[in-house]
Length: 115
Image (tube, rainbow, N blue to C red; front, side, top):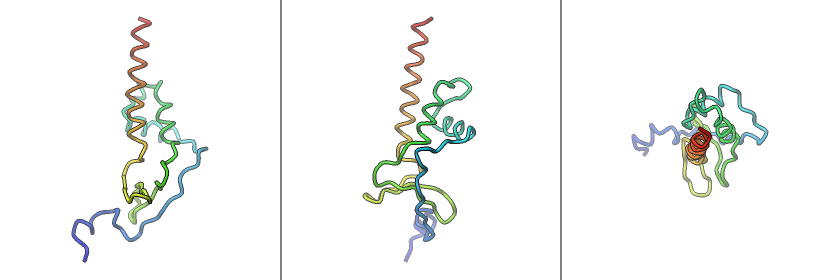
């Protein structure tokens, strides 16, 4: 029998699909880049110098054993076929959020030195 929790969990859907990872030549559209940049904490109007971090994040390869998957209702998540772990966010997103903070601090320090 399936518990109520499992029956409402989209990752428990029987219609799972393993997707192919985007190639290293993937070029995000500008709107995708801006949306992901905002999600990482970049304010494009103020942090235009940090859009490269978002571009790198969108084209980042998945770590070993991770694959993108799609639920029966079309939601994408990431699954580690070695550990059984699953994540809604790309496994490298936290790394790129940290990179945004780090690069923002570097830019602020550089601006303070020149003023």
